[in-house]
Length: 529
Image 1 (cartoon, one colour):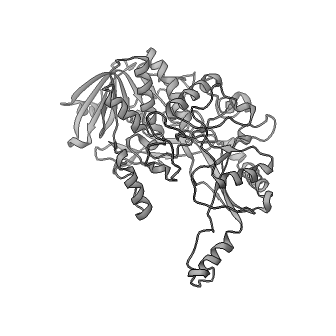
Image 2: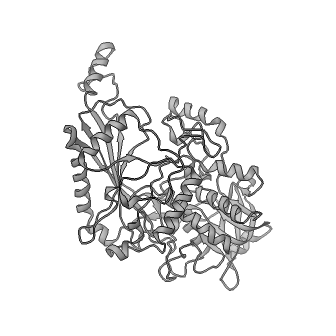
Image 3: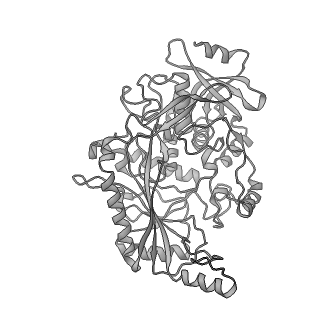
């Protein structure tokens, strides 16, 4: 035991359970729910550094103030001194980032699991597609996903979506007819939003503020936590920061988790359990392992930090659109999720939204002349003769070993722990094809624009990798991975990592459904153990 661990363990209150889950986001919620179905009566403690925000009854008010005054709709969902360089979301609260996610639940494709064997790129996942697809179906049932069958045979499902798809607005129907003139198939994105009462929650009213859903129609993990707590099935310790995992004398097990209560002036807490599960997301799971010098015999904790890059643009076209109805809903084409072998590699999704870019009413014209009354309306009508679409492609990029989360000794929290710093580095093959990938995607945008006399403008490229993952990647070889396909760490038989950190690569579309699916797959193994 290190000196710092001795200090942490002095005069600590002790809590014991069968399973201790560290982190209180969507993965932890889904894991706890399934474990209790598989093992009723299991004693589960969930430890979350942030606060619980169980105030759905106030969210209509938060929404109103956000719209009228630009106020933050989620005050208190972060910790002042618990942030890191390169971490794209500061959310720390019971429910995690999925408190205010958009609810899009796209699946990855079989190609994501076989990049190495199929294309000689990155790494294969140690999971068969049929196995993952089965857990996608389970994830969709638990989250409550509305969607429609895909247009491509490769996207065949073993089960239908739990709910009918979200209806397309007039604007999206017009844009779908336009986009499909390119020969590409489009459909509405699947979403964790109710199109009928489901899971004790109301149907979506399409009020266009998904980041602060006032009705509960969009799935949020706080609903699951509240249900489990009301039934007395879990113990939840919020405002409690786990600082270290302590290993057994022989190093094969995790003996305890050492924590401090933020709401009790740093009171020390010790958690003991038969099984420990890290469900702290891509940044904080690897961060805790590095602080604890745990699960890192391979030297790969915090390595291969992944995500996907993106290119976006606006397309002006001959179409009459009326922006403002459910603007967050979009179309997707999965045409480019697949890439033939023997040709230059490129994989991406393709999304289309309505856009009001350049079409909002204004009080001054391009020359600065004041516009009032009829002049304002005439100017507005002139600029809305043509419609606009926002388009974006998330494209597949692969991390190098140097794509890493490290401990930054120059930045520490109030307890003296160094904070994480993430630096994404793409592998050589990704960098070598970057220019060709950009050319291909812009060519697809031009292909769309050719319909309805379109024009591409405002092309932009992301400055970060979205839907990040990795840092504790799964694999069969302990020398080249941190955990096995179920998230069990190779070094400690009673320590699991679940969700986004375990992904070897991050696909080319939204990741939350995949994070949940691999977590549900892990739950079965954790229950067996």
